[in-house]
Length: 421
Image 1: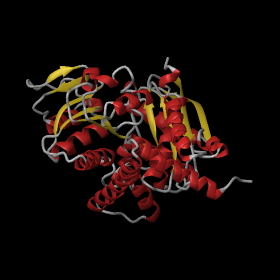
Image 2 (image 1 turned 135 degrees about the vertical axis):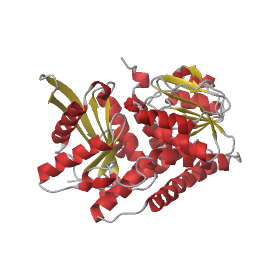
Image 3 (image 1 turned 180 degrees about the vertical axis):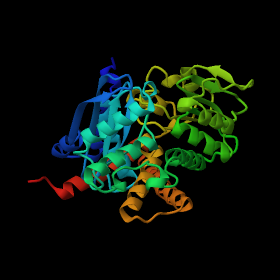
Image 4 (image 1 turned 90 degrees about the horizontal axis):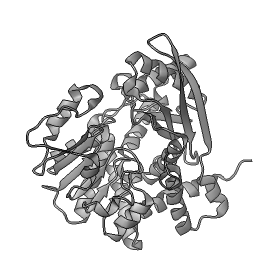
Protein backbone atom coordinates (compact mmCIF):
# COMPACT_ATOMS: atom_id res chain seq x y z
CA UNK A 1 0.00 0.00 0.00
CA UNK A 2 1.40 3.40 -1.00
CA UNK A 3 1.91 5.76 1.92
CA UNK A 4 0.05 9.06 1.85
CA UNK A 5 3.47 10.74 1.97
CA UNK A 6 4.39 9.28 -1.43
CA UNK A 7 0.89 9.38 -2.91
CA UNK A 8 1.42 11.02 -6.34
CA UNK A 9 -1.76 13.07 -6.18
CA UNK A 10 -0.86 14.45 -2.73
CA UNK A 11 2.59 15.32 -4.13
CA UNK A 12 1.03 17.04 -7.16
CA UNK A 13 -1.21 19.04 -4.84
CA UNK A 14 1.76 19.99 -2.62
CA UNK A 15 3.60 21.29 -5.68
CA UNK A 16 0.55 23.28 -6.75
CA UNK A 17 0.05 24.68 -3.22
CA UNK A 18 3.65 25.88 -3.19
CA UNK A 19 3.13 27.80 -6.43
CA UNK A 20 -0.30 29.10 -5.37
CA UNK A 21 1.17 30.44 -2.11
CA UNK A 22 3.94 32.32 -3.90
CA UNK A 23 1.54 33.65 -6.54
CA UNK A 24 -1.03 34.63 -3.92
CA UNK A 25 -3.92 32.95 -5.74
CA UNK A 26 -7.33 33.56 -4.16
CA UNK A 27 -8.89 30.60 -2.34
CA UNK A 28 -11.76 30.38 -4.83
CA UNK A 29 -9.32 29.86 -7.72
CA UNK A 30 -7.16 27.43 -5.76
CA UNK A 31 -10.23 25.31 -5.12
CA UNK A 32 -10.82 25.02 -8.87
CA UNK A 33 -7.22 24.22 -9.85
CA UNK A 34 -6.40 21.88 -6.97
CA UNK A 35 -8.69 19.05 -8.10
CA UNK A 36 -9.65 17.43 -11.42
CA UNK A 37 -12.71 18.76 -13.22
CA UNK A 38 -13.90 15.32 -14.39
CA UNK A 39 -13.17 11.73 -13.42
CA UNK A 40 -14.50 8.61 -15.11
CA UNK A 41 -14.01 5.11 -13.69
CA UNK A 42 -15.03 2.18 -15.89
CA UNK A 43 -15.26 -1.55 -15.19
CA UNK A 44 -15.50 -3.58 -18.37
CA UNK A 45 -15.33 -7.19 -19.57
CA UNK A 46 -12.87 -8.55 -22.12
CA UNK A 47 -13.09 -11.91 -23.84
CA UNK A 48 -9.88 -13.87 -23.28
CA UNK A 49 -8.25 -16.29 -25.70
CA UNK A 50 -9.20 -19.26 -23.53
CA UNK A 51 -12.89 -18.51 -23.97
CA UNK A 52 -13.54 -16.90 -20.59
CA UNK A 53 -14.26 -13.28 -19.71
CA UNK A 54 -12.15 -11.12 -17.41
CA UNK A 55 -13.08 -7.81 -15.81
CA UNK A 56 -10.75 -4.81 -15.98
CA UNK A 57 -10.85 -1.37 -14.36
CA UNK A 58 -9.79 1.79 -16.14
CA UNK A 59 -9.81 5.55 -15.60
CA UNK A 60 -9.90 8.79 -17.58
CA UNK A 61 -9.33 12.02 -15.64
CA UNK A 62 -9.59 15.54 -17.03
CA UNK A 63 -7.89 18.05 -14.75
CA UNK A 64 -8.56 21.44 -16.33
CA UNK A 65 -10.09 22.68 -19.59
CA UNK A 66 -9.37 26.38 -19.14
CA UNK A 67 -6.77 26.63 -21.93
CA UNK A 68 -8.36 24.27 -24.44
CA UNK A 69 -9.19 20.59 -24.99
CA UNK A 70 -7.41 18.21 -22.66
CA UNK A 71 -4.38 16.12 -23.61
CA UNK A 72 -2.76 13.16 -21.92
CA UNK A 73 -1.61 9.59 -22.35
CA UNK A 74 -3.14 6.21 -21.57
CA UNK A 75 -1.12 3.93 -19.29
CA UNK A 76 -1.36 0.13 -18.98
CA UNK A 77 0.29 -1.04 -15.76
CA UNK A 78 -0.61 -3.23 -12.75
CA UNK A 79 0.01 -0.32 -10.34
CA UNK A 80 -2.39 2.14 -12.00
CA UNK A 81 -4.82 3.70 -9.54
CA UNK A 82 -7.06 6.74 -9.48
CA UNK A 83 -4.65 8.94 -7.51
CA UNK A 84 -1.81 8.22 -9.93
CA UNK A 85 -4.05 9.16 -12.86
CA UNK A 86 -5.21 12.33 -11.07
CA UNK A 87 -1.62 13.38 -10.48
CA UNK A 88 -0.56 12.68 -14.05
CA UNK A 89 -3.53 14.69 -15.35
CA UNK A 90 -2.63 17.65 -13.14
CA UNK A 91 1.03 17.51 -14.21
CA UNK A 92 -0.14 17.49 -17.85
CA UNK A 93 -2.05 20.74 -17.25
CA UNK A 94 1.09 22.48 -15.99
CA UNK A 95 3.25 20.90 -18.70
CA UNK A 96 1.04 22.13 -21.54
CA UNK A 97 0.82 25.60 -20.00
CA UNK A 98 4.57 25.81 -19.44
CA UNK A 99 5.39 25.16 -23.09
CA UNK A 100 2.39 27.33 -24.02
CA UNK A 101 0.37 24.94 -26.17
CA UNK A 102 -3.44 25.27 -26.08
CA UNK A 103 -4.35 22.26 -23.98
CA UNK A 104 -5.48 21.34 -20.51
CA UNK A 105 -4.29 18.17 -18.86
CA UNK A 106 -5.79 14.68 -18.82
CA UNK A 107 -4.63 11.11 -18.23
CA UNK A 108 -5.98 7.60 -18.53
CA UNK A 109 -5.03 4.16 -17.40
CA UNK A 110 -6.05 0.54 -17.10
CA UNK A 111 -5.02 -1.79 -14.29
CA UNK A 112 -3.32 -4.49 -16.36
CA UNK A 113 0.07 -6.01 -17.08
CA UNK A 114 0.15 -5.88 -20.89
CA UNK A 115 2.98 -8.41 -20.98
CA UNK A 116 0.54 -11.05 -19.68
CA UNK A 117 -1.94 -10.60 -22.56
CA UNK A 118 -1.81 -11.82 -26.15
CA UNK A 119 -1.98 -9.37 -29.03
CA UNK A 120 -5.61 -10.27 -29.60
CA UNK A 121 -6.48 -9.77 -25.94
CA UNK A 122 -4.72 -6.39 -25.94
CA UNK A 123 -6.70 -5.32 -28.99
CA UNK A 124 -10.02 -6.35 -27.45
CA UNK A 125 -9.12 -4.63 -24.14
CA UNK A 126 -8.03 -1.44 -25.92
CA UNK A 127 -11.11 -1.23 -28.14
CA UNK A 128 -13.46 -1.90 -25.22
CA UNK A 129 -11.71 0.68 -23.01
CA UNK A 130 -11.87 3.21 -25.87
CA UNK A 131 -15.60 2.55 -26.18
CA UNK A 132 -16.13 3.02 -22.44
CA UNK A 133 -14.37 6.40 -22.37
CA UNK A 134 -15.62 7.52 -25.81
CA UNK A 135 -18.17 9.78 -24.11
CA UNK A 136 -15.23 12.05 -23.23
CA UNK A 137 -13.06 11.77 -26.35
CA UNK A 138 -12.93 13.97 -29.44
CA UNK A 139 -10.48 16.23 -31.34
CA UNK A 140 -12.07 19.28 -29.72
CA UNK A 141 -12.55 17.66 -26.29
CA UNK A 142 -9.98 15.09 -25.15
CA UNK A 143 -7.08 13.71 -27.19
CA UNK A 144 -5.24 10.69 -25.70
CA UNK A 145 -1.73 9.46 -26.57
CA UNK A 146 0.56 6.54 -25.66
CA UNK A 147 2.13 6.23 -22.23
CA UNK A 148 3.74 3.47 -20.21
CA UNK A 149 2.61 0.06 -21.49
CA UNK A 150 0.90 1.40 -24.62
CA UNK A 151 2.18 2.04 -28.13
CA UNK A 152 1.33 3.31 -31.61
CA UNK A 153 -0.60 0.16 -32.53
CA UNK A 154 -2.91 0.64 -29.55
CA UNK A 155 -3.47 4.26 -30.55
CA UNK A 156 -4.45 2.99 -34.01
CA UNK A 157 -7.04 0.69 -32.43
CA UNK A 158 -8.45 3.59 -30.41
CA UNK A 159 -8.64 5.84 -33.48
CA UNK A 160 -10.34 3.10 -35.46
CA UNK A 161 -12.82 2.37 -32.67
CA UNK A 162 -13.85 6.01 -32.32
CA UNK A 163 -14.01 6.34 -36.12
CA UNK A 164 -16.32 3.31 -36.36
CA UNK A 165 -18.62 4.92 -33.78
CA UNK A 166 -18.67 8.19 -35.75
CA UNK A 167 -19.03 6.60 -39.17
CA UNK A 168 -16.01 8.44 -40.60
CA UNK A 169 -12.26 8.58 -39.94
CA UNK A 170 -11.26 10.89 -37.08
CA UNK A 171 -7.43 11.05 -37.18
CA UNK A 172 -7.16 13.97 -34.72
CA UNK A 173 -8.89 12.06 -31.88
CA UNK A 174 -5.58 10.48 -30.88
CA UNK A 175 -1.86 11.18 -31.22
CA UNK A 176 1.14 8.90 -31.19
CA UNK A 177 -0.43 6.73 -33.90
CA UNK A 178 1.45 5.11 -36.81
CA UNK A 179 2.67 7.32 -39.64
CA UNK A 180 0.60 5.50 -42.25
CA UNK A 181 -2.69 6.56 -40.63
CA UNK A 182 -1.84 10.18 -39.88
CA UNK A 183 0.84 10.00 -37.21
CA UNK A 184 3.59 12.60 -37.09
CA UNK A 185 7.19 12.10 -38.04
CA UNK A 186 9.40 12.58 -34.98
CA UNK A 187 6.69 11.68 -32.46
CA UNK A 188 8.26 8.42 -31.22
CA UNK A 189 11.56 10.16 -30.40
CA UNK A 190 10.03 13.43 -29.20
CA UNK A 191 10.10 12.97 -25.42
CA UNK A 192 13.64 11.58 -25.44
CA UNK A 193 14.75 14.33 -27.81
CA UNK A 194 13.34 16.93 -25.44
CA UNK A 195 15.28 15.36 -22.55
CA UNK A 196 18.48 15.50 -24.62
CA UNK A 197 17.87 19.17 -25.41
CA UNK A 198 17.38 19.95 -21.72
CA UNK A 199 20.68 18.24 -20.83
CA UNK A 200 22.40 20.23 -23.56
CA UNK A 201 20.89 23.54 -22.45
CA UNK A 202 21.56 23.15 -18.75
CA UNK A 203 25.17 22.12 -19.51
CA UNK A 204 25.59 25.27 -21.59
CA UNK A 205 24.18 27.45 -18.82
CA UNK A 206 26.52 25.85 -16.28
CA UNK A 207 29.53 26.20 -18.58
CA UNK A 208 30.00 22.46 -18.90
CA UNK A 209 31.31 20.71 -22.02
CA UNK A 210 28.93 18.21 -23.59
CA UNK A 211 31.82 16.02 -24.73
CA UNK A 212 32.45 13.42 -22.05
CA UNK A 213 29.57 14.52 -19.80
CA UNK A 214 28.84 11.37 -17.77
CA UNK A 215 25.17 10.44 -17.85
CA UNK A 216 23.08 7.77 -16.09
CA UNK A 217 19.60 6.91 -17.40
CA UNK A 218 17.06 5.05 -15.27
CA UNK A 219 14.58 3.41 -17.63
CA UNK A 220 15.39 2.10 -21.10
CA UNK A 221 11.94 2.31 -22.65
CA UNK A 222 11.01 4.73 -25.37
CA UNK A 223 12.01 7.87 -23.42
CA UNK A 224 15.15 6.59 -21.73
CA UNK A 225 16.60 4.70 -24.68
CA UNK A 226 16.00 7.61 -27.07
CA UNK A 227 17.51 10.12 -24.64
CA UNK A 228 20.53 7.86 -24.06
CA UNK A 229 21.03 7.36 -27.81
CA UNK A 230 20.77 11.06 -28.68
CA UNK A 231 23.06 12.07 -25.81
CA UNK A 232 25.57 9.47 -26.97
CA UNK A 233 25.33 10.98 -30.48
CA UNK A 234 26.20 14.50 -29.27
CA UNK A 235 29.23 13.31 -27.31
CA UNK A 236 28.02 12.46 -23.83
CA UNK A 237 29.30 9.30 -22.13
CA UNK A 238 26.34 7.20 -20.96
CA UNK A 239 27.87 5.15 -18.15
CA UNK A 240 24.72 3.49 -16.78
CA UNK A 241 21.20 2.51 -17.84
CA UNK A 242 18.52 0.32 -16.33
CA UNK A 243 15.15 -1.23 -17.05
CA UNK A 244 12.91 -3.64 -15.14
CA UNK A 245 15.61 -6.33 -15.46
CA UNK A 246 18.19 -4.30 -13.50
CA UNK A 247 21.08 -1.92 -14.09
CA UNK A 248 23.97 -1.99 -16.57
CA UNK A 249 27.14 -0.03 -15.77
CA UNK A 250 30.42 0.63 -17.57
CA UNK A 251 32.58 3.55 -16.37
CA UNK A 252 34.12 4.07 -19.81
CA UNK A 253 30.68 4.28 -21.40
CA UNK A 254 28.07 1.83 -22.66
CA UNK A 255 27.51 0.88 -26.29
CA UNK A 256 24.08 2.49 -26.49
CA UNK A 257 23.45 1.74 -30.21
CA UNK A 258 24.14 -1.96 -29.54
CA UNK A 259 21.83 -1.96 -26.52
CA UNK A 260 19.06 -0.32 -28.56
CA UNK A 261 19.51 -2.89 -31.31
CA UNK A 262 19.27 -5.65 -28.71
CA UNK A 263 16.00 -4.36 -27.24
CA UNK A 264 14.53 -3.82 -30.71
CA UNK A 265 15.06 -7.51 -31.45
CA UNK A 266 13.64 -8.91 -28.21
CA UNK A 267 10.12 -9.19 -26.87
CA UNK A 268 8.86 -6.33 -24.75
CA UNK A 269 12.06 -4.38 -25.60
CA UNK A 270 13.88 -5.51 -22.47
CA UNK A 271 17.64 -5.75 -21.84
CA UNK A 272 17.41 -9.15 -20.12
CA UNK A 273 20.07 -11.35 -21.72
CA UNK A 274 22.20 -8.47 -23.02
CA UNK A 275 25.81 -9.62 -22.74
CA UNK A 276 28.88 -7.43 -22.96
CA UNK A 277 31.97 -8.59 -21.03
CA UNK A 278 32.82 -5.03 -20.01
CA UNK A 279 29.41 -4.27 -18.53
CA UNK A 280 28.73 -4.71 -14.81
CA UNK A 281 25.26 -5.72 -13.69
CA UNK A 282 23.99 -3.67 -10.74
CA UNK A 283 20.66 -3.11 -9.00
CA UNK A 284 18.28 -0.41 -10.09
CA UNK A 285 18.73 1.23 -6.69
CA UNK A 286 22.51 1.32 -7.04
CA UNK A 287 22.19 2.81 -10.53
CA UNK A 288 20.53 5.96 -9.15
CA UNK A 289 23.49 6.46 -6.82
CA UNK A 290 26.27 6.11 -9.40
CA UNK A 291 28.92 8.80 -9.69
CA UNK A 292 27.91 10.87 -12.73
CA UNK A 293 27.32 14.41 -13.93
CA UNK A 294 23.69 14.03 -15.04
CA UNK A 295 21.05 11.61 -13.77
CA UNK A 296 17.95 11.05 -15.90
CA UNK A 297 15.14 9.22 -14.06
CA UNK A 298 12.97 8.09 -16.99
CA UNK A 299 10.92 5.28 -15.42
CA UNK A 300 8.07 5.94 -12.97
CA UNK A 301 7.24 8.30 -10.12
CA UNK A 302 8.72 8.30 -6.58
CA UNK A 303 12.20 7.02 -7.48
CA UNK A 304 14.20 9.70 -5.64
CA UNK A 305 12.92 10.08 -2.09
CA UNK A 306 14.14 11.22 1.31
CA UNK A 307 15.62 7.71 1.74
CA UNK A 308 18.13 8.01 -1.11
CA UNK A 309 18.36 11.75 -1.90
CA UNK A 310 21.48 12.23 0.19
CA UNK A 311 23.23 9.44 -1.75
CA UNK A 312 22.57 10.89 -5.21
CA UNK A 313 25.95 11.85 -6.66
CA UNK A 314 24.83 13.58 -9.84
CA UNK A 315 25.11 17.37 -9.88
CA UNK A 316 22.16 17.70 -12.29
CA UNK A 317 18.93 15.70 -12.52
CA UNK A 318 16.81 15.92 -15.69
CA UNK A 319 13.43 14.32 -15.07
CA UNK A 320 12.43 12.18 -18.05
CA UNK A 321 9.64 10.51 -16.03
CA UNK A 322 6.62 12.16 -14.43
CA UNK A 323 7.01 12.79 -10.71
CA UNK A 324 10.23 10.84 -10.10
CA UNK A 325 11.34 13.10 -7.23
CA UNK A 326 9.30 13.58 -4.05
CA UNK A 327 9.02 17.00 -2.36
CA UNK A 328 11.09 15.76 0.60
CA UNK A 329 13.85 14.68 -1.78
CA UNK A 330 13.55 18.01 -3.60
CA UNK A 331 14.39 19.87 -0.40
CA UNK A 332 17.36 17.63 0.40
CA UNK A 333 18.76 17.93 -3.12
CA UNK A 334 18.30 21.72 -3.18
CA UNK A 335 20.21 22.01 0.10
CA UNK A 336 23.01 19.95 -1.44
CA UNK A 337 23.12 22.17 -4.54
CA UNK A 338 21.81 19.55 -6.97
CA UNK A 339 20.02 21.21 -9.89
CA UNK A 340 16.78 19.60 -11.13
CA UNK A 341 15.23 20.25 -14.54
CA UNK A 342 11.62 19.38 -13.62
CA UNK A 343 9.41 16.86 -15.36
CA UNK A 344 6.86 19.41 -16.58
CA UNK A 345 9.66 20.93 -18.65
CA UNK A 346 12.13 18.13 -19.29
CA UNK A 347 9.69 15.57 -20.70
CA UNK A 348 7.40 17.99 -22.54
CA UNK A 349 8.78 17.02 -25.96
CA UNK A 350 6.16 14.31 -26.37
CA UNK A 351 3.16 16.55 -25.85
CA UNK A 352 4.69 19.27 -28.03
CA UNK A 353 4.95 16.91 -31.00
CA UNK A 354 1.55 15.45 -30.12
CA UNK A 355 0.26 18.99 -30.55
CA UNK A 356 1.90 19.10 -33.98
CA UNK A 357 0.29 15.76 -34.86
CA UNK A 358 -3.12 17.02 -33.75
CA UNK A 359 -2.76 20.17 -35.86
CA UNK A 360 -1.64 18.11 -38.86
CA UNK A 361 -4.63 15.80 -38.40
CA UNK A 362 -7.08 18.71 -38.27
CA UNK A 363 -5.57 20.37 -41.35
CA UNK A 364 -4.59 17.23 -43.29
CA UNK A 365 -1.33 19.06 -43.99
CA UNK A 366 1.93 17.47 -42.85
CA UNK A 367 5.44 18.68 -42.05
CA UNK A 368 8.66 16.74 -42.64
CA UNK A 369 10.78 15.46 -39.77
CA UNK A 370 13.28 18.31 -40.00
CA UNK A 371 10.48 20.85 -39.52
CA UNK A 372 9.02 18.86 -36.61
CA UNK A 373 12.35 18.64 -34.79
CA UNK A 374 13.13 22.31 -35.45
CA UNK A 375 9.74 23.40 -34.08
CA UNK A 376 10.14 21.12 -31.06
CA UNK A 377 13.56 22.54 -30.26
CA UNK A 378 12.38 26.13 -30.60
CA UNK A 379 9.44 25.62 -28.23
CA UNK A 380 11.12 23.56 -25.52
CA UNK A 381 14.35 25.60 -25.50
CA UNK A 382 12.26 28.78 -25.37
CA UNK A 383 10.40 27.42 -22.34
CA UNK A 384 13.71 26.45 -20.70
CA UNK A 385 15.04 29.98 -21.21
CA UNK A 386 11.94 31.48 -19.57
CA UNK A 387 12.25 29.13 -16.60
CA UNK A 388 15.98 29.79 -16.25
CA UNK A 389 15.47 33.56 -16.38
CA UNK A 390 12.79 33.51 -13.69
CA UNK A 391 14.79 31.14 -11.48
CA UNK A 392 17.88 33.34 -11.79
CA UNK A 393 16.12 36.65 -11.24
CA UNK A 394 14.08 35.46 -8.26
CA UNK A 395 16.62 32.98 -6.85
CA UNK A 396 14.28 30.02 -7.17
CA UNK A 397 14.78 26.39 -8.08
CA UNK A 398 13.96 25.50 -11.67
CA UNK A 399 10.95 23.50 -10.47
CA UNK A 400 9.52 26.43 -8.53
CA UNK A 401 10.06 28.79 -11.47
CA UNK A 402 8.44 26.33 -13.87
CA UNK A 403 5.40 25.94 -11.63
CA UNK A 404 4.99 29.68 -11.19
CA UNK A 405 4.95 30.22 -14.96
CA UNK A 406 2.60 27.30 -15.62
CA UNK A 407 0.14 27.84 -12.78
CA UNK A 408 -0.10 31.56 -13.51
CA UNK A 409 -1.02 30.86 -17.14
CA UNK A 410 -3.74 28.41 -16.18
CA UNK A 411 -5.02 30.71 -13.43
CA UNK A 412 -5.17 33.64 -15.86
CA UNK A 413 -7.14 31.57 -18.37
CA UNK A 414 -9.66 30.46 -15.75
CA UNK A 415 -10.07 33.97 -14.37
CA UNK A 416 -10.56 35.42 -17.86
CA UNK A 417 -13.19 32.83 -18.76
CA UNK A 418 -15.00 33.24 -15.46
CA UNK A 419 -17.46 30.85 -13.82
CA UNK A 420 -20.48 29.52 -15.71
CA UNK A 421 -23.35 30.14 -15.15
